[in-house]
Image 1: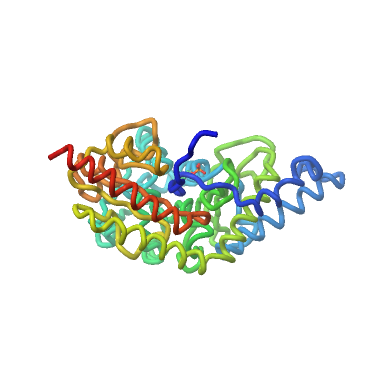
Image 2: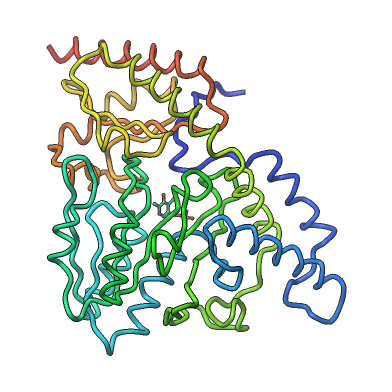
Length: 385
Ligand SMILES: *Cc1c(COP(=O)(O)O)cnc(C)c1O
């Protein structure tokens, strides 16, 4: 078997937890019915499993089950939220507010809407990656219909002040959406406390299967949303398409496990992350990207002085699997738009590493990664001298 490096890329995806897989398996071959088949037991048992999953997911975010719309993931949920609001509310206004450090699954739908005549304000962030609330206050307009701000950033892990933003939106009767892809099952999310109207979720960042997610859509007061997929009228007309029962069951199981383990797992990952940071610190010439404490427990993002980004990633390839400071989409090699928004120059942005620790990361692995990064960076700096 090929030697495989240590996996520290948990913001890209996570392995399926074996307990999640176990929960999913009966729904492929035994309880395989279509949850929309209402005339026989095969359909009923699939529908019952979907209903239980909906209940679990709703409870995790303090919502009610009818407010959960299943999708193929957070990309689809973001598209449904942003385009769906734009379409449903364009007669009221055509201005949207979002943030420069959002995921492309938010930025690209916004850019698309700009091509249709909508106007989008992309708020800058402070050097610590957090949204400046004063800048938000100044950005609101009479024709603003939607604010979209992610819960946790997928590159630098910072946690945006959702409750403060939600309060401002509610006061102005503006719809508030958040991309919660990195947050569900890892940090507390509460649609009431945060006054969220729409919240995008995905399973595969929290030890669930890829290709499944959900959009929370508030019912009281009802959020107007135009469907983007039309067909059999599934999900109360908001997202047609036969529900993927095994994936949905796995998604709910993953979130249930994440919620149950949240406190312990956060503490363990914070400790491991601290070991990694303390271990690397003697290298010197390091810049922490993102707020030091208001961030996901499993995220560390560092820029390294005096090394070439490409060479750094190449040197680490056999040791640790992680992402660099080039755009998180592997197709593009531009420097990360998130690190640029923090004010990093191109060279530093390229010479950056995103460490994403996870449920299955061990202290021994962190020790190995520390040793590997130190020797690689030292060697590269020596060459550069
Ligand atoms: C991974 C991710 C997405 C995309 O989610 P998919 O389920 O893979 O479509 C969107 N936003 C953020 C912040 C992410 O981390």
